[in-house]
Length: 251
Image: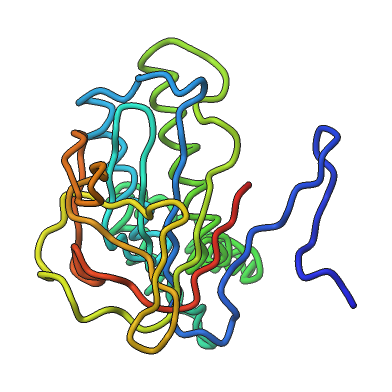
């Protein structure tokens, strides 16, 4: 039987490809975590604000939805809703509109001018490649996380006059898919964490993961504030249980 996961050797050890939702699933939810190298406390107020700004930028470009997030001083959590890639992709004009929403009118104007130039000289294939370079980054958790982390690192290194990586290894991700819980207050969320090793049976006998409303966990299992920027945009309820097939990926 073929292996379920494609692997490759990296620095003398096997590295698993990321587990993603099957292509026939209409929506998938990913809880992603990434830590600063050496787990140093580098993300202060200004850095956190910039991180959230870049997160919103690539949320629009990648056509995903950040359900909730929590940015702390040395790592962040983000719960992302990723729709299935549509069979009919956006038109050229729609893609340019997405670019404008993500990067602003100036960038969109430059892209539009380049695309128009290729159309004008009859190089329609080249114009198509530019549009495809954007649609290739949509509806994909890997492109979202890669773009977000790389762009923030570029800004951070320039601001602090440093070089090299900012993040510790690859980001860790948990695929949470299935029916959403109807419990919880459904209001604004201050943050969340998937509690390691914790799951219980949901209404349909499916494993569930806790989404808390405080950015952390107390010893008694209740949520507690740990500081940092956090927020939510509807979707999975704060303080509720998200039910579905839960698969943790440790990378």
